[in-house]
Length: 139
Image (cartoon, rainbow, N blue to C red):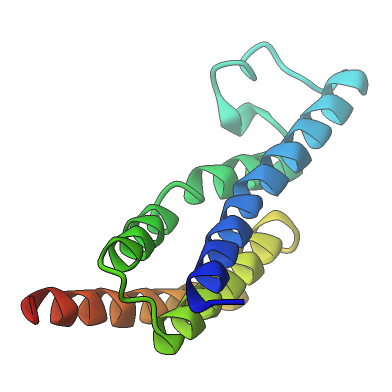
């Protein structure tokens, strides 16, 4: 399997996170609704939901922040035909840290663990960014 294919797989693994969180959020909201625990404010106020629903809702919103930069960077590398082993390793590093971040976020939401996974993911993204800048300057 070529390196570009491994990068595409990392992108798909990252896309799987918001899909999973969305399904988990729907399951949690459905359970709340069936249990009769939904207040009148729930349709317009996420804070009106129970903590598990609030956690998945917040996690879902979080999936459209840093990961957007990841997608853009990956497609820049693909477009430039500069997919390297370093980039693939950094991409998977980012994806694994984002999965850990999401799992912590929707379960215990233990901030020290969430923060460490966030920082490790940001580190991978920063290295990818500077690698992209370096490659563009080589043109």
